[in-house]
Image 1: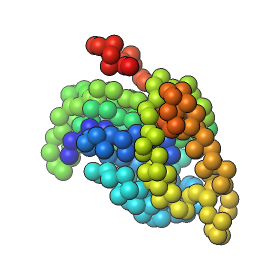
Image 2: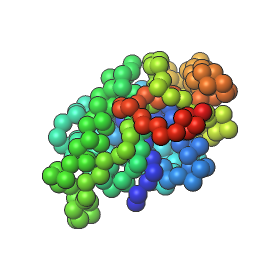
Image 3: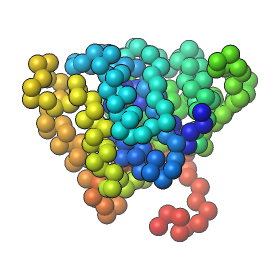
Image 4: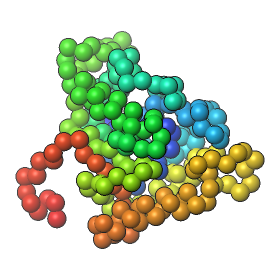
Length: 238
């Protein structure tokens, strides 16, 4: 299945918190978008791996993704090594995306930056025909995405560009709240976590408003780039 945008996320809910408005916007524009989660977030304070996988499926339906899968990497202990790169190369070649959205290049959670580097390197190596991978018993052709962009997560990073998600804020919020085990629930018997307070959801909205303010809209999502973007027509960037 070829997609236009492949979103790589080390934990279920990373994509929802950081770029689900952008996902919803491009799906409405007719683009095919898939999410691949690296882990089930099994080290999280609340919920279980099984619960989070079910919540990820609920979010998939809200966002209207064409596909979502989980690679089963070990939460907290995956590495940027040959085995993990080859598995990710297989995924990139399977979906053949034009654009990849990946974790923040640096963040509070050490998994995020490590996943960003793994994603960057796998996207490059995926374009080398001498690296052999197979899917469903068939050799895969080399494939390199045209661009890799990194969404911004907990820590503020100055964006290289911002996407206006104002018309898609409600879908973003619904996709986040699909992860009921993780976010604010006054009736939950589980221990409090960094992201489970009502104030954290206020922060998510405030960040989106901050990004929107940069481009004169109500809500936005910021991204950093990995290479210089070619512009053929100045009016394309108005």
